[in-house]
Length: 214
Image (spheres, rainbow, N blue to C red):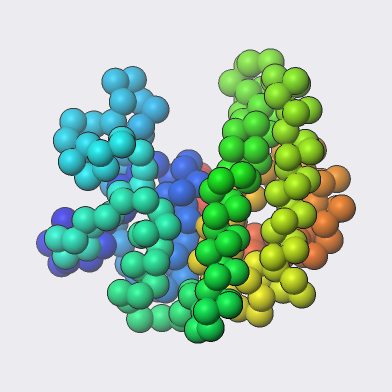
């Protein structure tokens, strides 16, 4: 824990879930310390990290002795524990839409957009590995379904849960930052113009620039 009691986030900048937590902190204007934890390093997470996250994943979080893990729990805590613009909505219906979008992202979009498309089309060539074209082709219809579902949830937007920026946008943005760099993303987003405009807007926010991977 920081000597001043400020929040500490544990994880790697490349992680979409670590970035989601960082985006929430940035949008709330909260100063924090990021402690690097690379779960893919040889030998796995550093000694003692399982005390913070028993499943050895990232991120983990601490604030004034209060420990937490799982990105969704962390971002909700950040929104409720610190002053700044509200990132959750007032009505039950609007909050349900936020939670629905986050559930779609976690259950369906993350694996498809990040691992099946971004990793195979962008990361693999950068590492000198041949992309798994079969895996990419299989992911395309699933990706289209995910994008269609998110566009339906957002309605008239301009944000994923309606008129205001919420945790749903911050949960989605790091995944889309990866996905949008893949060659297949352009046509898929062009077929969902409202979602494409959402991505253009969220990608230009200062919090995105502040949390970009160097």
